[in-house]
Image (cartoon, rainbow, N blue to C red):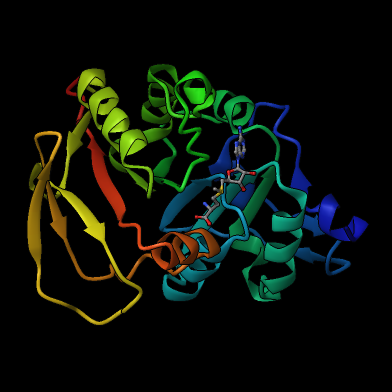
Length: 242
Ligand SMILES: C[S@@+](CC[C@H](N)C(=O)[O-])C[C@H]1O[C@@H](n2cnc3c(N)ncnc32)[C@H](O)[C@@H]1O
């Protein structure tokens, strides 16, 4: 990978305030110039961003927000940084690190949204302890979001999705949005198709149209090509009265 691209990625080892990060002036090794700080209207974090399709999509449709991505996958980071427009550098930060280390080191209550798309599913029973979403992980996510901030998760592994729903409900820190119904997408078409509802594991699953905030990532396309449905669920951090 181009060393200049790697220089742009943080290692995630030190305590960091994302608000301060975005507002300060940076020397960017990618452009050999100083980039001005910015005051984003929203800060969105994607954990395990893969090739970065969602981050790029977000940067293009919301010009006032900032995005933060964490991933360990070098090729994906390089792919993302190559596609990133120079004018979006100021509102983008990337951590090439284990997300579990980074989220422990970020300042609390600074994020508006945390997105986890297609976390590695580890479908076999004996692998499941490797799944990134655990009760401890959800406590860290809740700490990073401000009250009313959102946590969004999508997966084509229904077992993982249902397990997350259980953990979210148990955590008590989040309120289930979308009328406590799980949404699912079952084909590639970005056009709407008739909504239908099925019940799985006692949860109502609404087959819905493709949501505008979700680009078809490599992983989403592969799931749909194999005829799988993609389920997604959105949660809001409960307002804590002081
Ligand atoms: C199945 S891919 C999904 C990528 C992307 N979210 C998408 O929808 O296309 C899972 C991603 O999570 C990353 N990942 C897995 N465990 C991680 C960890 N502990 N910290 C950071 N990234 C991680 C992997 O490197 C991979 O890029």
